[in-house]
Length: 251
Image 1 (tube, helix red, strand yellow):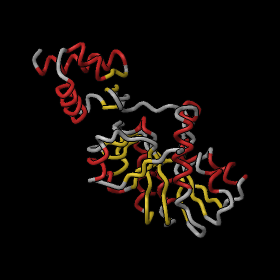
Image 2 (image 1 turned 30 degrees about the vertical axis):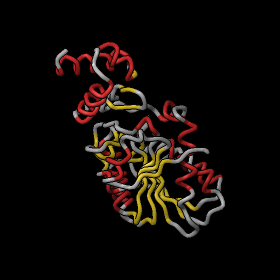
Image 3 (image 1 turned 90 degrees about the horizontal axis):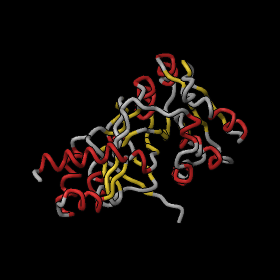
């Protein structure tokens, strides 16, 4: 089987099955494991698929955005682990930005009792922050019904009034070439500005977001530290050339 034919077969299998194991690709194509690994690396570079532990997976649609209810139940254990580690970086006296999103929302219980100021564009965050007695400022602007994120020109204008010690940002995609991405350009603008206004920025992304690319760029990898629950060991050196990675577990 010629290389183009083999690689198209790999793409077709991933599109049909969402996730395909490495051994399945070896068996179906008749190629060696090392050849398939090279194919997967090349196809990943071309944004045709993403490598996962033990195989390859389909990339999500660039403009796809689940609702906050859908996102809140996905990878909840991983999000909680990431959120706990992120909250551990917050010190008394910090002024922080807490981005809209389900992983940043999970940080709030871990922030209880800290003497901090929070600025957020997450409508869903407000009641929880109040319940924990945390001093909170709300960004003004247009609220998206689907995710509860406050976005738009008014949001970026009000955000410019602040400076942060740390910003904690959610992302739908984290990719070596494309950096941090999210489906909505207006939401991307808020995230990007918050990162620039912070002395230190952190992107909270569970393993399902790694090597994903969505429609709108938030920033380059170097602009934030990545906090995740898992990353393929083969990928870590390439990411570490561009930024700092915190891989956290519940062990």
